[in-house]
Image 1 (tube, rainbow over the protein chains, first blue to last red):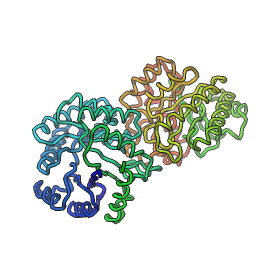
Image 2: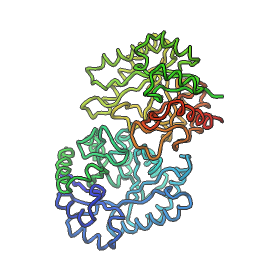
Image 3: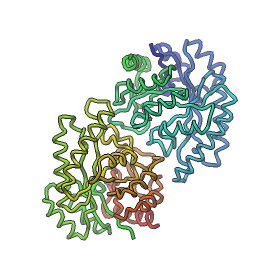
Image 4: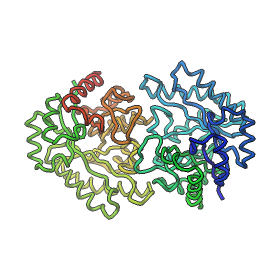
Length: 272
Length: 272
């Protein structure tokens, strides 16, 4: 049996405490909180709550978004990344999702944005190496380039990891990368380097009614998630399958019913 | 001075006859109609109307979308492509925009979809070669993979052109390809092969409120259209710059005011 984890964003409107209870009741194995979910608790308090519920810490969200406040915001962005990495370490997360950010404010230069993000990431990595936490660099779908990430393919993410060395790996996400003709070759490459730090899944709906907030549960959309999973497994990844769904539609459902449906879908999709 | 053309979709709610009048009044050089815009006219009638207004035929839309009605719809899709190519030829269009289609109905296999599209395209090309019309293969943004195109980068489009030989080139579109780290290298490659058949522009809005119908005029969004244009020009393309904007917002404007604003934006963006 595969282990499934819940990214807290799936249960956006629940408190952290409610979310771990619901996740445990739903039969999931782990939970990945965001910093804002747990910032009212010390890492050791949050860690104890998760352990007491019988869950594991499947990851932590997030660090990066370096461009958001411009070049002058670089120091603050890196300091925030360090704070979150430190929290993740004390929480016992083995990796932290790292999303590098999009264009700089009032700039249209992708080259500038890429150089800035890479540079900030390298500095963040120096700090992360002093902790047990791996940076899980996430390639986002190209439609998020302006706002969230100039890294839009596993090829680029692998290349950045090659250039940066130890302490950084990948967050492989089906939603962001399924369309890419090179995705399976890049998953294989990442596997050979022992680099797949975490693995997110959600499905692409047709139609997609919102660019960010209309993702689907496994089987609701058109991604061949079973085939995708075969490639991730073949690459040697044996950690949990983390469900990360941004969805206005699903957030409105009763959490227990949502999680029950989700678990059924996970088991049927990932039975192979 | 660069020449600007209007893709008829910019003026969706106008008849073809109204659209050519407005486009000519707006100082544009050419117009690219869709088959449905002109199907009430013979190609020679449509051709005369365009010439009488002082415009040129900047292109024709479109052929492809082979997967839309499934494998059983293959013959009908190719026959429709041939009909549109024939119309384009008699209209005097030098190229026809070619969008290869997405996933087959009830299938999640990208490999199957890619093979099917390539095969249909090859058959279409055999026919196109008997006409003066070049197939302008358009790579669409990856977010359109399921519905419209499994070709999502100029790298793939160039590769398909390499494999298919004479009679096929590229429709380069800023909106679909700007995010791609390899876009400028691929434009250069296409230029060396004399392969850029047509050139579409529109801008990426932040936020983008609809996946298909929320594109922007030059300068409204975050694409560095001037830099993009430099690369297209350096690659040897010297045809018109065709504005192709799908936008619920802009379709509501007064057409003459919209075109006046658009022309101003085109001249200021592409003055270099």
